[in-house]
Length: 423
Image 1 (cartoon, helix red, strand yellow):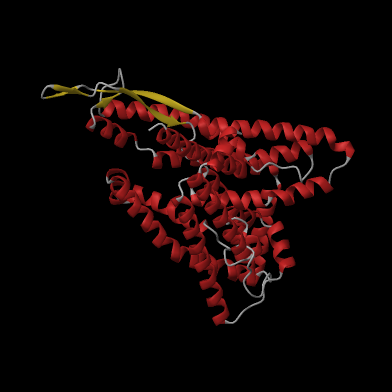
Image 2 (spheres, helix red, strand yellow; image 1 turned 90 degrees about the vertical axis):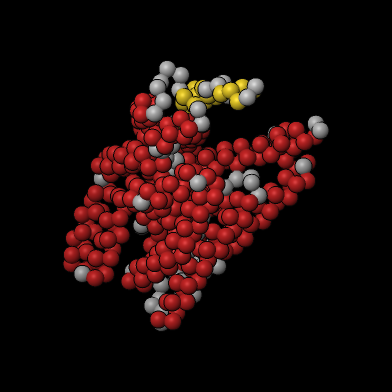
């Protein structure tokens, strides 16, 4: 509470917070402006019966469910960033640019991701609109109308990305993450209202148990995000002239959850992509599409098989994405260049093997926890038997991670101002 009050006492920090809030309000206004020809009732029915687009709506900040000009939100940019990270495996040039050229190289890498966002946003907008037209959710527009809607949605996605970057410039949180955070939090009143109207005294113990589980899950997500293995690092002493440099000791933090929420996105995309293909097949070849749709529906409705498949995919993708984002050889090479070493471990290849072994063990616990977070809604609904009572592990992971990162950045700015006040 003391820190919270202190935020608003510092004029510069108060202005930054107000700017961020104002930009988030502008984003929410964009999500409320629909494109022409939308039937709200049919759109709502479509989203309630389609898990894939309900999940993607999470990353659009709620714009997808309204079919607004901000329909795609920051989704295309997230996709572009993931593609660029995957390209680092294929093209060593991108890997060198990101890891070896410092802040300048990373800024250029992010610029390439922005360029890639434009065609991705246009393709996603066109594909989504065509799917909604074939499903009868929106009226079939003219060619000019379809093109103008694609352009409007693409432009809206780039504007949302720009708003996110403006938020990041205030240095009190990541703009892209805060936009997703705002979209998730904006849906809480609706969820709370549904839970309130479905409440009866007979289910009071269930509601209390749900609240306890919710608190424990939040605590677990915080523990997962903050958990790290501190590897001690010692720097060799060097003599230059009459002065001695180095000899200091530090540590390298290896996070338990190196992959963040990306494995959840990959896993859900793999699981729900057959539903997307089945809907397209139904529009092209109704007989074959109905057969595929029936098979997919049986798989999705079998909660046990679906849950096991979801857990295993999240587990596998956690290892896969960690292997992309964390390069033990590069870490060992940079340590050797700077004269650092892990006590008791020889520099070079031995240090690289040590980091690989340590990260594999850490990733196991992170992967298991992420898998449990992913299937948490299935477990909660099975225990309670109430559809309204569900905890989205993905949403919780995003909300908690963004809140922690924002608090950390605000605290660092308050600390800097405290030191400035001592001068």
